[in-house]
Image (cartoon, helix red, strand yellow):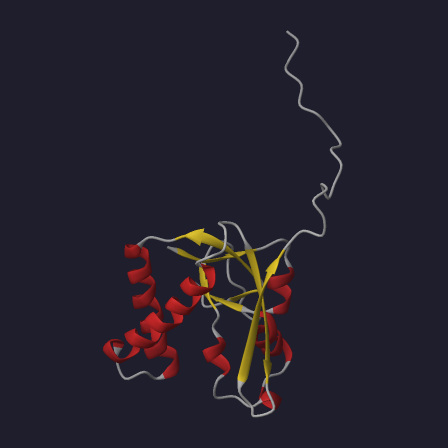
Length: 162
């Protein structure tokens, strides 16, 4: 199965999110964190997290970019449990049994998003509120601007001449 992992191209996430996700965390959309908020309530760094942040499942921090990676069934079950516990502790789910179906649904959405993507495909998300106040998400694949190398090689590795 395929799933998303956080990735950093630079240190921007450490400056734009209150809690940045570490590189290489399993990740989901995390839009549910804003479901009970009005657009005017989301300001500052929270606005950036709403607009462009994936939710890392280790730190529960945000990441701008994710990459498709392989995930095995046992790790997926662990993610369900971790996310379910997060729903209990942070969002008031009555218990883990009640939270697990929602956690499974969140993870299934990401697995479906990744199912046809190649390993190492980079994803970004753009989130907004529609006219009815519902959250809308648009996921896009990030591709390099050209097939040409972005930088020229400035050195070569030569064997020692002993």
